[in-house]
Length: 365
Image 1 (cartoon, rainbow, N blue to C red):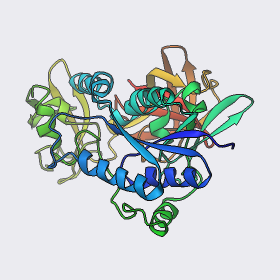
Image 2: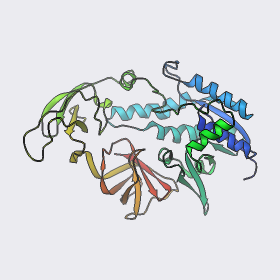
Image 3: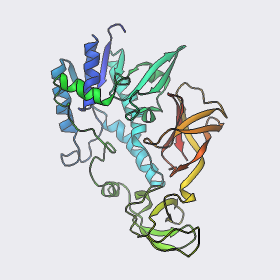
Image 4: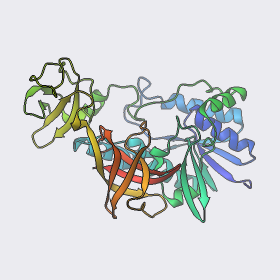
């Protein structure tokens, strides 16, 4: 690739640091951009943005590139956080990282970078882009344990055409080693986890500040009252911990759970403010062979073919599950799986793949 002006999104972490380093070594004109996306209660107890900015500046100094900080917190609150709250209030479990990538990291950031004269942007995501017959494809990373294409499935052709993922073809262990060999000050920095704006703070405490808790009853599917919940927004399908109800013997019978089987969230009865639970991880109520996806995004602009065999994920860490798209139109699609899927959760994303190519997906209804 000829020398280009590339703006790299630098988070203070080792991945974006090595992405910038590799591009600089390839001879590009590299500039770092640190994005501040959250300002509410931005203190050192839970939010690490000050420390992250210091790390990003230290890396830029070591590599020998300029770095700029930009504040996208207003855009983030309007486009990502408000939707996050709406989804939780509706009883769904959203994935804000998916929306953040589409709305902030590859929209606001891209627009800002182009205004700075960038030819391309780059990030430390583990994914790949390739061009085939004038169309850009999003591919899984070589390091399958770190692949982040699931979180990037809402990108479009215009965004992909301007994006580089320098880490897509290398493994995380190599990234750490490159950082160490080049004396990057964050080479052994722990990877960030969890929702970006919540950090390590208690989740219920955080949500309670923005949404009113509405406690209610916990019922079994066969109509037994077994406890009380703190508010439906605090629970997700398949959740086991934090229900406050111990295992208990059910009515005798060969098909009933044994004494002590754990309880799992099976559904939310929003009109009656009831949490519905079942005993046993393999309960039929936790297994789904089909789902409906809405708010669709197909990366190439064209939907997948009906009744072709693809793979799909309904959560990030899930293994690829063989499936067919049995119906698709502009507003929704229906996906059927070869094997039942566990704890399919409304609000999460279903992402469809053809081999290593991410075709796109939608929000599970």
